[in-house]
Every structure is written in structure tokens, then in C-alpha cells.
Length: 334
Image (cartoon, rainbow, N blue to C red; front, side, top):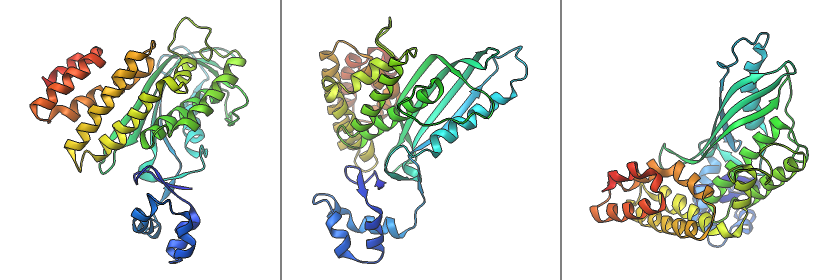
């Protein structure tokens, strides 16, 4: 499938439809048309197919490797390969049945800080993962999430090849699988209501396998409610569906129309924020909501920064209640 995500509701076009359009065989193309969408975008699809645009994988991972804290270690030059190994594993694997255009890819910025290594090539590290998706009709990106793993332990030996096997737990590959699926899930939710559900379910399966294997940070038997287990459990919990639907409205009906219609975009963003705030008030755990605001607080201040005074004040009042931890940024709206 070719995914033209910036068309209405994440339009998916089978490759043979493109071929049909290219050869002007409407009889072959029309059966694939969804009544509400395809007729409206028929010629746009034809142009995209005829233009020969470069198609790409879903993820574009950029890895930064910091080994400055491995002082005194000798004979470990091979650790430099970790950067390219992670990038190849994520960027070259086919994570979905869809093919994205180059400008539609999800950007993942992964910062790995190596903290220690033992004689058996067991590493201790810290990990920061940021996922971003493009904003329609602009060159800007919007952060989907940013998460920190203060303790990531894995084994890496020279010339090791990572294998994608969701049924087997591996400290190295499983962590990458989890975050890729998390990025695909958040991205999917931003383009269609609950559109990330298939990826969140796959991530839940990854967590279950890891928890059964006794992996650290993968189970509920922990003193914190803010680990991989609890995050994916919340995202698969229907009690958080209101947040996820608002997440779609925020991105697709807010950010993606901002260039064309700022008033409508701000109205939709405000409605999304009200839904997120109400869902937050109805749930005991705020992890998912805190993640949202940690990723979006500067973006939110920017969205309403040039609004009229009344709308700025409304945004300030809502945000100061929904996200008091970033009041310093929201004070700019007063």
C-alpha cells in the first residue's frame, strides 16, 4: 500500500490503482475508491502517481552515540558501530504494509549515552527517544513524544546482526522494536481516530514477551507507574480513548490546517485540549497526559501566541489548569 497521509483521513492507495491511473484505466481504479474520499482526491492521486515521487520506509532514524563516559576502557572501538547498526535496523526494516513518501516519514531522534561496559560486552546506557511527524503544508515537524530511559542494559559484540523477532526477547532489539511501534502508534493516532491501535497492540505483545522473560522495566512489578509496561497499557485502555481521539483532532484538524485557516485550527486545538483535560481529570494516572504536554507546551504557546486577546486568555486559563508544570511558557499568552 502507498500511504498518502496528508489526504483526508490518511488516504491509502493500492499500487495497482496507481498503475491503473497511470494507464487511464478508470474501470480498474474505481472499485478501489472509497465513496467519501477517493472521488474528491482522484486527480490528486493521479498526479502523485504520475509524478514518480520517491517512496520510502516509514521511519527515518537518526542516532547520536555518546561514549565519553567510557573512560579507561580499552579495545572497544567497535562500539562506534552501534550507531549505524541501530539506524540500519530501524530504517531498513519494513514495519508496516504501507509505503510512505519521503516527506511523510516519521523522524526518530535517538540519543544513546554509553555509561559502562564489562568484559563480556554488556553495556549500561541511557536512552532518549524523540519521535516527530511532519506538519502539512509546512517544513515544520511536531514532536509526538519524547521519552528517557535512564537505564538501558544490553549486550553488543563486534559485527553483531540484529534480528527482528517479536516472539523473542532481546535487550537490544526489543527496546528498538518497542519505540518504533510506539512512534507508529502515535503517528497513526495523529492521522486518524484511534489509527494507532494496531501498532499499540503490537507493542503490547512485545511488552508481554519481555515481561515473561523477566526484562527490567517491562512488567508491572515495579515501584514506578511510569515505565514501558504502564505506558502501553494506558494507550490500549479504552479509558484513554478520549485523549487519543483528541490527539487526532489536535494534529489533523489543528496543526495540519493551521497554514490555511488559523482561526479554525485554533478552535479545533482548543476543543482537543478541553477533551484532553477532561480525560485527565477522570483518570488516576497522568503519565500519558504529562507526556503530551511535555512534548507540546512550546508548540501550544506558539499556536495561540498570535491569536486575539480573548482567545489567548481562554487558552491560558485552560492550559494553566491542564498543565500547570509549564506555566512559565503559558504566561506569555496573558
